Amino acid sequence: MKLIAQLEDLLYQSQQAPNKEELRLSAWRIVVHESETVALGIKDNSPGSVYTPPSYRQGESGDVFLVWADGTCSQAMVQLPFSNNPGYWHQELEQWRQASYEDPDAIHIPAPESLPLVAVEDRAIKKIINGEDKILFEQVNGWLSDKPSQAKMQGSIQAAWGYRHVRTSTGLAVTYQQSQFVSWFSFDSLVGGGFAKRRLFRPGEQEGLWSQTVNQYEWMQKEATPVGPKTQVILAPSMTEDMLRQFILPNFSGNRVIEGQGAFSKESFINHTPVFDEQVSLIIDPLRPLELGSYLVTPEGIPANRTVLVQEGQLKTPFLKVKDAVRWGTKPTAIPQGTAGLYLKHKTEVPWVEALKGVEDGVLVLSVLGLHTQDSVSGSYSLSAPHSLRIIKGQIVGRTDVKLTGNFLADLAAPTTKMARSDLDIHPYLIIKTGVQTL
Image (cartoon, rainbow, N blue to C red; front, side):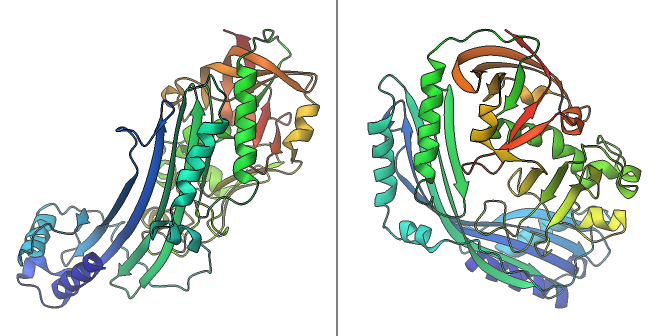
């Protein structure tokens, strides 16, 4: 906790009795992360090689946001100094002052509010950090012994534990522990599986993910019939997540909405304009226990709260950081951690195994090329999907290469769009009618 203590002392002094009057602060905010991480990897079927050695890392880093007495502000990333130079932080403070800028909407530091009870730590991960890391090596050995014999495998496991400190000049002083466990593996860069939560996997989860991925790899070895004009497109959960990241997150950013740079205007949110099918809702929920997107408080000191972005097809609110909320004239909302914590829902969801049985002529898209080049605001896409799986009469029968053309915002607005769920995934299988043709 050295970094947070040094920063608090520095900023309190600069607010009460600075060495120089131009260095006087009127308000400030600090966020510091302490972390310990253990990692192990596989590259080309080789565990712990020179490219993926077992590793342990620890560190402290953070961010400061400062409001000076003249109303200007500064922000900076911070780390513990390498030396014991007693003048280090005052030199940093002078540099931060020189980099100050005017942003009157950003200088608001909210008063503390009560925090929710959210489980964000798994003690089993702390034990791994403390040396009981046998589970990591057993998992890697299990992967290598059970993988398809001809496959070239890549993989990684990472366990992390640490503290998060949030301090503000308005009186917020929060410190809490949090954990993270992330694992992923792939075969020949064709198919892969991943797990990312704030807890270890539970009995059956890793086995289910492994079995699903091995089956997909085996299906990839068989050539299937080309798609036709009536072929239904199903986006796998990882593909749904990628589409949300590309087309949804940017368009629900409060800053982009206010600046008129998104697909939806501020007025459309105020008027609760219907933009998706009435069966579809979109939610940020950081209150779910031990999910990767869950937290107690945002870096700006806002308590976690469940925020509905789209309810039954109608726009409700973009996600708003403090500055955006000031400009909007309302309270800040929950903030997604990338796509973690973002949940897409459909009123008539069914289990994936049930939905699969009802697909007469379909293609399951696992990944695409060039998604990051598509226009987020328009929602339109034209994408090659060279590693997709053909579905005939409810059965996956082999591999096919396809091209998709359509519009993701229109997909979510279409009454023909359906969703299916798997216990292995946070995001749904998305069953859509869109342009598809054989490559």
